[in-house]
Amino acid sequence: MAKTSKISGFYKLSPENRLKIVSEFSGLTEEEASSISAAGALSLDAADRMVENLIGVMEVPMGVAVNFQINGKDYLIPMAIEEPSVIAAASNAAKMARDGGGFTTSSTGPVMIGQIQAVGIADPSGARMNILEKKDEIIRRANEVDPVLVKFGGGAKDVEVRVIDTPGGKMVITHLMVDCRDAMGANAVNTMAETVAPYIEELAGGRVYLRIISNFADKRIMRARAVFTKEAIGGEDVVDGILAAYHFAAGDSYRAATHNKGIMNGVTAAVLATGNDTRAIEAGAHVYASRSGVYRPLSCYEKNANGDLVGTIEMPMAVGLVGGATKTNPIARAAVKILGVKTATEMGEVFAALGLAQNFAAMRALATEGIQRGHMGLHSRNVAIQAGATGDMVDKIAEIMVKERKVRADRAKELLDEMMQKSKR
Image (cartoon, rainbow, N blue to C red; front, side, top):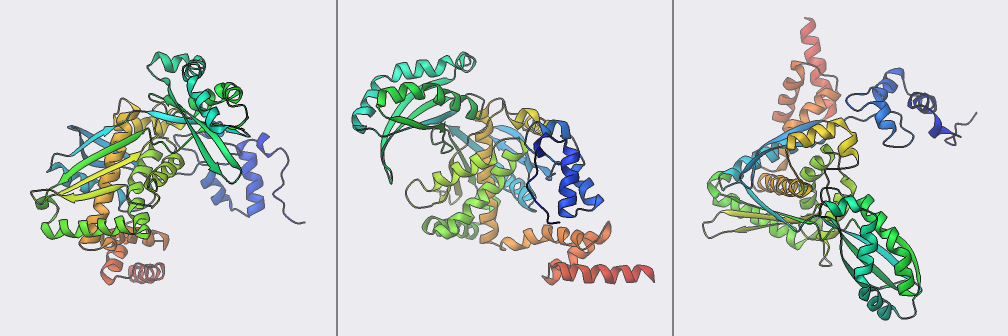
């Protein structure tokens, strides 16, 4: 009988029964199934309320980046990531930045955009003006549905309207600017957008379709800056090497993509650890990098009058301290406590500083010994473990592979077999 993925009532089953069906379909061993269902701090019961069709919980290593001094305050930054060398690199970069006074940050505030799309309008420019004339009434109606947010100083603050050309003709897009305070804002913004949509439809004289938050959070920008003294980072040649690497990224989108990936290594790891939306942050960052029409680096490097390296970064950061997994996942709650931030804006600024540190660390490695040396030193241990090494053998095999410059699964297995044979003699 052929296997089928068409399973009636799957969502009604318990996680245990869902996993049983998946195991039978996929041929999972009992050990494999147990590894999926094993719950830690996040119980299966809690996880089952967070997502649909739950069968288990996937663990990701969580570490802490140390040495960070931001606006004169010291931070430990929790990071959840599977890639080796990232946390060590960020910590090392933060240590170097301390010689120049650490990181300083600023931001635009926690404003998100709700978009209301109106189509089929005979006079789009006239409709735009009509909507803008009723701005105060739109804001009033939006704020009526979230008095708690308004009470804390947030809520709808402004309205912008654009007429855009599309393959389907001109559309009138209303932007509702919402100060989300300490929330990421998706629920509040979407509710407000849906509330004012019928009124905007009436004002525009067309039909409203989409009413949803934009993840291009260009009104919620976080900035960070650090001076890396030439003495702290290895001399003038290193400064010049980093500048050359930055100029490469600034002039070439192929390089800029990897440059920005290095930034997101840090940012996404901290966003994930604190239970925030990694996909929203990634999407916003990359569209911001493309806002000029060409994909560019999110960071910038210059040499100051003393010959020191000055690094800056500017990027959207829609993170929150309330709602979502930040509150429901106990590990995320603990991570926020480790971070010690009091507002979502402070969190976003810390993450921007982390992104700059992560990027600087990669740039320095590229400009000096190359990215592989440090990365492979840590990656080699994973390869050794995958080959079956345990205990002291992991480090011994890793050390040999790095020296040989042969960090491969087949070499790890050869070395493990040799060591096992020697231990039997």
